[in-house]
Image (cartoon, rainbow, N blue to C red):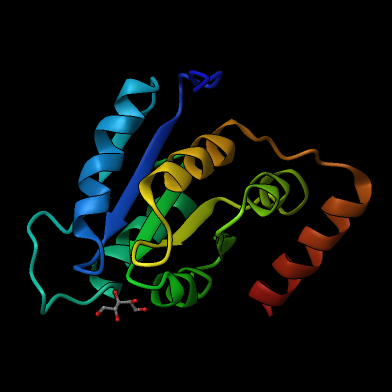
Length: 156
Ligand code: RB5
């Protein structure tokens, strides 16, 4: 697997109890691939925890540029993706395939990757994470125009 081309990146990550263990594997995986991982919790496995408690601080850190990009995990990936997109300047999606993860960055400037820890295996997660972090927004006029319309909606 290819090492990161973007060694300067600080990446925020969070997970609830719906695959807490997956986050615990991704953090050292990020470090091994020369990313700086910032862990927003959970810090212990607690089957009663609530994903918004970890996701909201992570999403705000992405929106404010405190971290370059974010990775959020819950059991299905649905809960974290719903919450993430309520934070202005966060462009999050629940992704399970390679094409969508790199095109999501290239065309949509996706800055927060959501995954369902109970829906995909660790080998796929590793590929998705690297594809997400190594992709860059293309920034052509038509893509910028679409992002402007999203920003207008957020400002309305
Ligand atoms: C587990 O409680 C599960 O419901 C949660 O992790 C997540 O999948 C919600 O969207």
